[in-house]
Image (cartoon, rainbow, N blue to C red; front, side, top):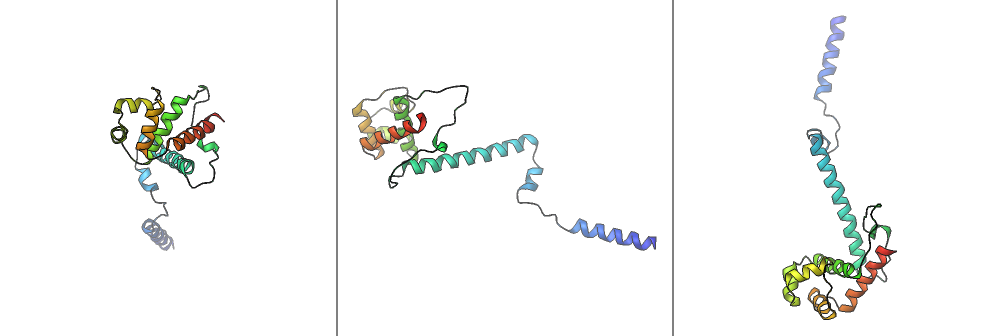
Length: 164
């Protein structure tokens, strides 16, 4: 009887060893990673999620077909609480110009050549370090394929979303 019981236990162990465990895809690979690699993967996933959320907000913000853009909490930039940040008109203009350029996947060089502006100066305008004249802004807006008035409305919408 004891031999029969041991045989059954051995058979059950063999069956259990052969039976694949239900594992979610990717989990087995995560187990093989070091803790530092796991943190890196989790950080990359969080960064991708944040990037996707920002892209969705941009698409809603820049959608010319929408009747009106109403900024949401997701549209506000992530800013450390202990560090209050002021937004300047110069910085807002630069932000909008960079968003328009990157939305169309254009390089600084392409836009600067088309607008007749030096690449370095355009870069400084986008970073909010230089104030551009109205003629220069008009030239850059044309090079980006938007009217000056449309670009200025986008700047106003951006300022409303970050200040409000």
